Image (cartoon, rainbow, N blue to C red; front, side, top):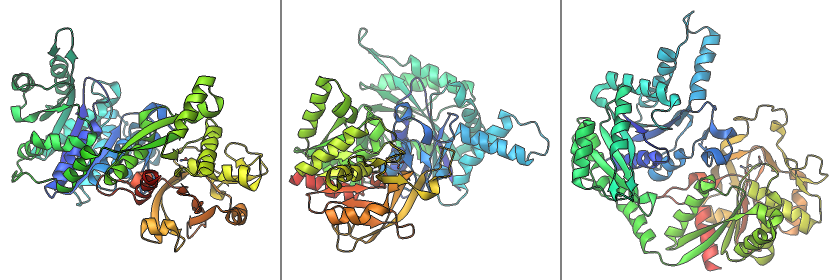
Length: 536
Ligand code: GLN
């Protein structure tokens, strides 16, 4: 039978619950257990697909085409598991499912209430992963901060599950221990209050993880243990570390995994070695040389291109380099003030490689096209991802094929040269949510091409999230002038990869390879791109 670990956070948001959940998963895997991790987000959106990246950062996409919170990216990168729609849930989806059942008449005339109907739906969605028989542990992360009105039904569901499951479930609660500079003191009061809040929902946390910028001594931990009814060995601290990938090692050093097992009555045994993981960290910590990559995008926000930055960093590490990522604001390239423009242009020139980022809508695209032109005409390694690939195609049409008005019909519905056009099966869709071409599709690579060599295969599967595609009417012209279609979907014949093979490295993918790069399995395309940038 699967065992359940519930991860919640208190005091403030952004404590890194996703990283802790991933680390717990990683450490249990190292002990030979099969794990999965799921995330419940308390917002009403059905999924984060319709959210602006400024709200919650990047939207991650699972193989089966669910648009999810970016924490699922951490889960996959840390543990190598493949998540699906069962790993991502929101309040909106819970309510929708309950309301659909009510409309069907499934509740036989009952009054539908938060307790028990919503809480039962939450419990079922937690247990459905455990009941597959595939996992020894299901780790459930609850988004948001306890005390928020939205979290209440989730906490009630956890309370009930803890009662039903007994020792087969535990609560791991993250809090924040602030450092007051004027008093030169770390303060545990917010943690005590947060645990009180948990208790008011009927949940006694079994394990506390204290996020802190300064080391907590044993007295401090003892105080927390005493005030919060938690064993001393179950008070773990999570100090700021140079990299998120150090967190599992730090957690293991403090015995988080053994504390979890002990609490659940499972024999602890020897502490496993984290061989390949430590090797990755060693490479990371010893790399001295730097490869400079510019991310050309419109969202000036660290989390908006999370999976891309992580993929770049995995690849650079395995090439014994540190990656220095510079965000280049594409809007500034064309519409910025004189200083903004100058800075962006300067940044463009300083890079060893450029990534033209994914995105939606008109804003910032002319700058992306300009950056693409710069990369093409200066032979800078350039990687276009999704909208980035589409920008490569448009730039080529405008400046090589001579269609000055070429565009995507997403940006200019009336352009006579719609080299990027809406996919046929998208044309009658009116709902924006969850209706793009989403999830993993096959891509057949041209035998003998550089792409086939990079992947070491001619058939690959990559994840998608788009509505528009390369317009095959123009394919011959492109190939004649030097931009090749080197990967396409075998059924729909959609162009999935374009390349200018005469350049150093100039590849655009309609899919998002960044969703599949993990710490122990860096993505071949990122590996190859970084190599080209280093060699330049
Ligand atoms: N806006 C483009 C499309 O829908 C690209 C999407 C993306 O970059 N993910 O096709």
